[in-house]
Image (cartoon, rainbow, N blue to C red; front, side):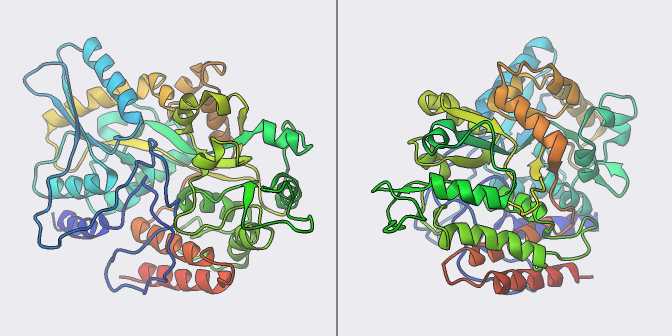
Length: 486
């Protein structure tokens, strides 16, 4: 129990920095190395549109003496029974409606079983979950991300599922991406069952590309080719391109590319260049390696040297806002962007999807993907485990409905059953993740390291005169201090 309570103490602090699927404003100040976990800024779009992974945020003046309001939940009651399956998750964005459809279908097919579902924004979820678990009052089941499993498991907040789910083949490890299964295995035990795969996909405007005299069916293969394309695509309000005399870099009408959320954009770019944040064994810091510096320098140059991507500064437009009005050619955005396209049929009509394009000199490919995973908190009794098992088993085998949200069902058999004409972006994302997908670093300090590297990259991209190497070195030293803890 001491391990669980130490995890609870740490996670309550970390909840202040965690917004696992919520972009925040770009960081512009280097964070000091903390003696304990402290809130630090993260880099992401300043005004991201509401999506399944990036819900809208509000800005307000906070009275420090005011009582903390009770967290607002998206509550759903499905079916009637004496003892419902109590489920908590962070599924509150546009995916909430699709998830509700799944739970309703479950209750109809299992009339003797009911579900009490509570969805919270992620930072609230990561306060409630450890608090309730430490107090001995956990829900029967939770849904969060594969990237957080190592930290949650190391703090004693999860129940291993080998005996509960995998021993009798209610879930089969072979039904899921092996890289993902490794990410959710802690100390030799499988801690969760994957629900979906989600992450970056390339969405590109074929009309803009054709108007630039380029072929949308033959995309650039490496960073040098992409830069050539970008200089032909990017256009100012007077119709001039960056290589033309008189190009107005302060009044660009059409951009070639856009720096989107660091949490997905930068791991992919770092890996493409042969760098990263940590080595595969999570013991060596790579953030300030020559390869990692080259990756971030490439983005810095796109913004401030070649003027083909808008600077990653606070207040800049979200990529989707530019894209939907025909001002952006290439957009790296999430699988959940399917909902955005459904809401903007005119721009969807000139959009194709594909593997994210390589920005590396040699064309090396990589993309980060994550997973919403289904888990049972520590302390759930046998009856609660049995209730959770029933729902987890059903959800893992009925993920096709979840594809409506744009997310990729995690079960490989369900993926293979999807009609590419009905779910073109979902099928393309499944191919991408299975071919070049990588999960994020596995570390019991994951959340703190994530905050440190996002801050460092935010500093590196904050201005034209930012020193990329120095910013990444400062972030790397902070991460080394975190890893050096006993």
